[in-house]
Figure (cartoon, rainbow, N blue to C red):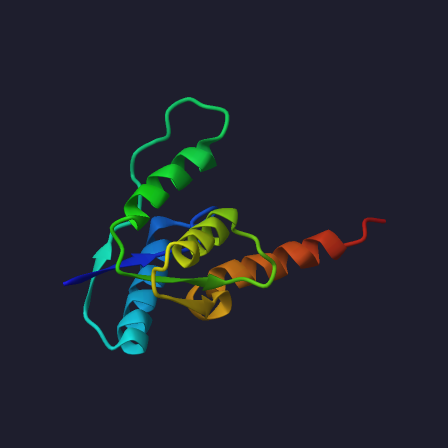
Length: 127
């Protein structure tokens, strides 16, 4: 069975939100590629070792998993708010892994909602 790598925003999200997005993206990938996929579990439960750049440690683990992929599905985020997803997408493209991008608002509405709330808070005027 072909293996699918799902690049999903994780920062600031619960495991439940992430798993829900991954489930949706899995279904989308199977429809788009017309293929049944075994999903590479990209949820990393391990804690990063003490280091200056935890996100980079997680990204390294993620790229290692990407090497097993036959297909890639990721998110398109017009605000480019998830650097790891951008790097994973670029790496998949660079190494010829068939890919598809889904608009962030379809698979992670919680992220969009949080951005709107943050924007409203930033626009509040204090008297």
